[in-house]
Length: 262
Image (tube, rainbow, N blue to C red; front, side):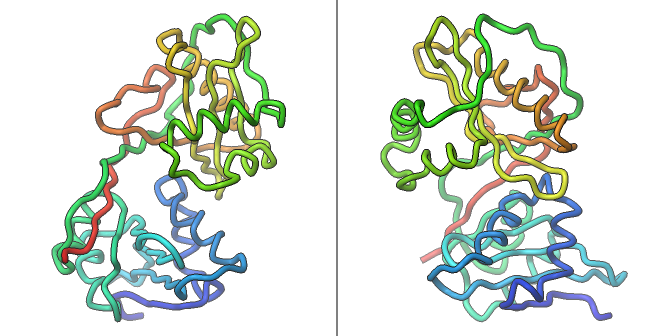
């Protein structure tokens, strides 16, 4: 088997790449989520998928270019990222992934960083945490209006319509309640392999500093582990490095988005 990139347009032909991503699901969840989405009917540009075969004949990297949004670069050697632009018919308008991989891609496809860097954290061992007043509970349809206001505040009005209703229907949002008031929300995405990403994590401004979100994250994480997840991750900005380190989350890598130079 020769080394280099193999590109396909059909997700059902992306078997080698998907197996690679599932084997490293914790650091490739955006690609697995995008792959799941393109298998559902929808418009947009034709998707594209690819996997990198190293000199030893083993799959060592993968990417997903969904119908909408940036090219998603998964785990791969930097030399694979630098080689990828030469295999593409058209340069992407934007690409994102681990910072060293994105920068290697940009060495052959000039671009510039946009937005903020993010930092992926992975749970090592869940640590005991002193619980503040209150309790965790699942979010219900009765919480929709409050959560919708919080979502609008976080996304500054640029979120997807119906996002809160969809998350409530999926049952993956949980709340911390104290004194009859909901003060924090934490949720998680779908599980791929044994990996799950926590998102969102939010505390109402006037209730910050009491440890409510940390306690809620601990409760949600414990439930995920009990139900079979072995890798739990969450994302912060580098400016907020210790968000949940007290629970046992440790930094893995920084991620960035680049936009093609004009």
